[in-house]
Length: 533
Image (cartoon, rainbow, N blue to C red):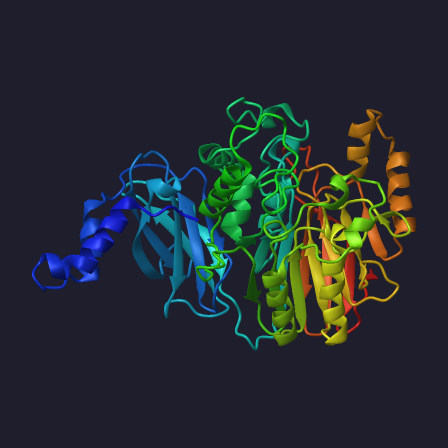
């Protein structure tokens, strides 16, 4: 996703053709790299106003660390240090890294080597000649045969303008091996009115809507400037998948979503800008594909013998939503064959790796609900989710059933509501071949508030409860649903069970830093059913 740096291209060309230029004397590529590094000044002063972050581990002893350097127009070198202790008395690795102007002075560095051991805690920081970054922490993956419990936090949907990030402050204090963002890490435009001091005025029209690469970068800088979000990133390794708002509301493959009527750039140009800014500001890179297929987002992370995580891309390969993407209307087209949701390549990858996995729990990071959410029998509310692409859902879940793949659980974002339930082949039941946990939202408003904003009529607490009750009655495969709260979820994978807690924080209180538990759940090994505790 990152543009080729012109100086690097020229330097590589010089190294490759140096033998011709110098009459058959080859130029050592390592010497060429050192020469280029000498030409790049080491940063003096500067600032690290967006903090630090560590990415999803990519091997048992590897991870990615990230920061951004403020205050410079051209490339600068920084020093990176990795230590076994937060005071950096036991430094195990040092290296110079480059903050590139071509990537908005973000730094993304892969760490792998004998200085890192599996299942260990490490600390890292960056510094210029005179300024240190905040200290970050990461934990390397456990050995493949480890049966130690694995704890994962997951969240989604954090519209900056809708509220405060107290949930991230609470998550920073959790004991977690990994945090997953399931989409809508940023919002390309504003959707909710919130506290006056959270007003988003970015974009060419100062209305919060971004469409170009510089504007998307500014959006990430605003979000990552939040101190609670920085605290979460500094505390835990992190990985993310995008949903729609990283690009445009309800976009689908090459099809634009719901535009505001003020389109300033073609959609594909806007999509590419959103892609690039996402990877610049995330502490991990795209997965490299072959030249015909290109690079991609979806990936898997081995969390030891207890769990393997599969992260999906449910936007880039899909066909447009059926029935005009209208809510609350019958839509036979949603069940027709031949319509793509995750696409052939990703579907084959997922089916193959689910079947091959030796881990007890197969966790699928999903932007959108796999369970159906109906207003009447067989009539789903939302065609933008798996409900709009019934054939691919049946293909995947039939594969899970027919191949006897046990202990599959979907971890889901998007709908700003807490749901837990059983997953039948058609997304309903009464049989269950998997389970699903939908982890609420950090700030974005949920179903009752959406009804309220559509009708203009404020809902009473009793009406909130009525919405919750009716959704449960119409969807018996849901074992739990909660419409009021904002927050995140924590999952613990053990050899004999999966345990999940839904955690809530008051998103309208700027001083909120602690979470309360809404409800706990358990899935026994081999059961494919959610037990509400």
